[in-house]
Amino acid sequence: MLTGNALIVGFIVALILLFVFIIKFKWDAFISLLVIAIGLGLVSSIPAKDVPGIVAGGFGSTLTGVGILIGLGIIFGQFLASSGAISKIATGMLRAFGVKNSPYAMGATAITVSIPVFFDAAFIILHKLIQNLSIKTKISLSTFVAILAIGLITAHSLIIPTPGPLVVADQVGSDIGIFFIYGLLVAIPGVLVGGIIYGKFIGKKITNEGRLHPSEITEMEETKDPNQKEISTGLSFGMLLLPIVLILSNTVVGLIFKENPDHIVNTFFAVIGDKNVALLISVIVAMFVLKPYIKEDSSKIFSDAFDQSGMVILITGAGGAFGKVVQETGIGDLIIDLMQGLSMPALLLAFLFSQILRASLGSATVALVTTSAIMGPMAIELGVSPVLLGLAICAGGVGLSLPNDSGFWVVSKFGRLSMTETLKVWSIGGFLSGVTALIAVYILSMFTGILPGL
Image 1: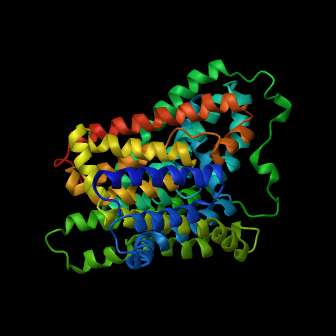
Image 2: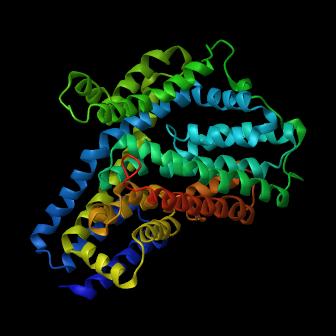
Image 3: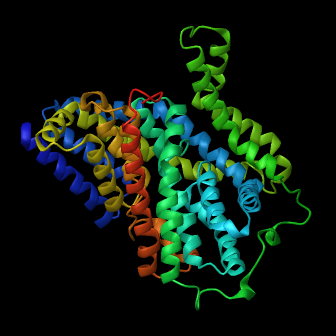
C-alpha cells in the first residue's frame, strides 16, 4: 500500500492515466473518473472493502449540493433559447451600445447569455449575428469571434449558475450569491483583455478577405415563423435575471438580518432564494410565461435539456467521487506540506492544477469539478479565502482550449477559422482571459477581511 511520497507519485500516475483513458482510449470522462477513483483507493492505505462505499459516498454528497441545480439550470436555459429570448438579449445589447461600439456590446452579450445557456449552444445561436456585424461594421470576423467565444467561456467558467462554478462554490463552501458577485467581477476584466482588447489586435492579423461576402448578410428574424408571437426584449432580460435576483435576495437579506436569522422576512427569502428553489421557481415561471413564444412542444424542450444535463450530472458526481478518495487517502495533507516546502501560493497552485486539467482533458467542467473536489476542502488549511480559492480554480478552467476540446471545433467551424487561426483567436485569447481573471483574484485578495464574504 502506498504512503507518504509514494502516495503523491501514485496520485500523479492516476492523473496521467486519467488523461490516457480520455484522450488516447476515448473513454468517457464519467467512466474514467470512476475507474481512477477506485484504482487510487485500492493502492492506498484505505481498506479495500471500504473503497466502493467511499466512491459512492463522494458521488452522492457532491450531487446533494448541485445535482438538482444543474438539471434545473439547463432546463431554464433551454426555455430561454427556444423562446427566442437569447437572440432578443443580443439584439437589445447592440441597440443599447450602438453599432459603433458593437465589440463592447458583444462582450456584454456573451457574459449575459452564457449564464443560462451552454457555451456550444450559445455560440451557434449567435454566430450569424457576428457575421452580420462584421459585414456591416467592416470589423474583422475574427475580432467578433474572439469576443463572443472568450466572453462565453469566461462566463461559463466563472459565473453561477453554470455547472462548473456551481460545483466549485459548493466544494469550497461558499455562499452562492457571494460567489456570483465576485465571479462576475473577476470575469469582466478577463473578457475585456482576452476577448475585446486581444480580439481587436488579432482582427488586424486575420482579416475577412476570402472569408465573408456582403451577399451573405442575413437577419436573425428571417428564420422565424411570421405567425409566431415574438418575445420582447424587456421580458427576455426579466426572465434571465429572475433566478439571479432570487438568489441574491437571499444573500442580501441574510446580511441585513445577520443578528436575527429567525426573523420571518429572513426565513421567507432564505426559502425562495435557496439556489434549488430559485431555479425551480424560474423554470415554472418560464413554462407559463414563455409558452406563447415557443413553437415546439414543451416535452421536446425537457427532452433536450435532459440529454444535456444527464452526462453533466454523472461527470460531476464522478469528479466528486475522485475527490473524496483523494481526501480519504490523505493526499491533500501531503500536497499542503509539499506546497509549504516549495513556497508555492495556494491560489497559483489551484489555477495551475485546473489549467493543466483543462488543457489536457478538453473540458472546463471536468477540470473545475476535479480540481475543486481535491483542493476545495483544503481552503481553511491553506489559509486562503474559500471564495478566492474557488475563483482561482475557475480562472484556470477558462483558457488553453486545444483541439481535444469540442468547443475548439465549434469556434473553428462556425467562426470560419482554420485550425491555426483558431489556436490564435480562441486558445490564446482564452489563456489571456484566464490569466487576467487570476490577476483580478489576487487583487481581490488584498481586500480579504475587508470586503464581505472574502
